[in-house]
Length: 168
Image 1 (cartoon, rainbow, N blue to C red):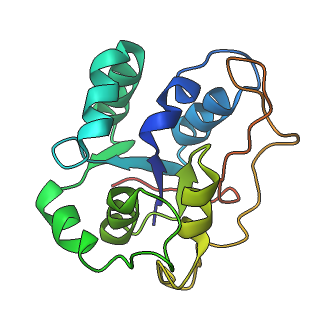
Image 2 (cartoon, rainbow, N blue to C red; image 1 turned 90 degrees about the vertical axis):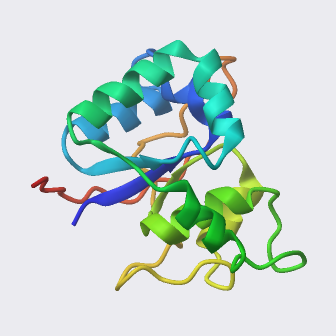
C-alpha cells in the first residue's frame, strides 16, 4: 500500500525548491523512489488550483508525477461530502477543513505543510481517525535536520518514516 501524501497549497513553493537538502527536494526524491504518492484535488480546493496556476513548476511536477503514477487526483465531490464530517472549532484549530477532508477521503498519512495548526489537526485523532493500523500522529521527519525554506528560515515539515510503495 502506498503512503499517501498531501501538499498544502501554501507549501507548493517549498515543494518546488531545488536547493540540495531542501524539504521540497527531499519530498520529491522520496516520492520518486516509490515511498509514496501525492494525492490532490483541484476542483474542490480552489486555493490549491489557484496556487498551481501561479506556480508553473509545481503544476509541471504534479503532471509528471501523475503521468508516472506517483500522484492521484481525488474526486472533489467526495471531499465536499467528507468535509461535513470534519469537526469545527474548538476541536479543529486550523482553517483548512478541505485539506482534512482530502486526508479523510484519500487515507493520506503524510502532510507537507508549514501550517502548525493544520499539522496539529492532521495528527489529532479527534479530528481525523487512524488509517488502518497507522495513526497520523508522532510521525518522525525524514530529515536529519529541520530544512530551510526559500527565505532561509527553518521550517518543519511532517513526514511519515520511509515505507516502500509498490505501484500496480
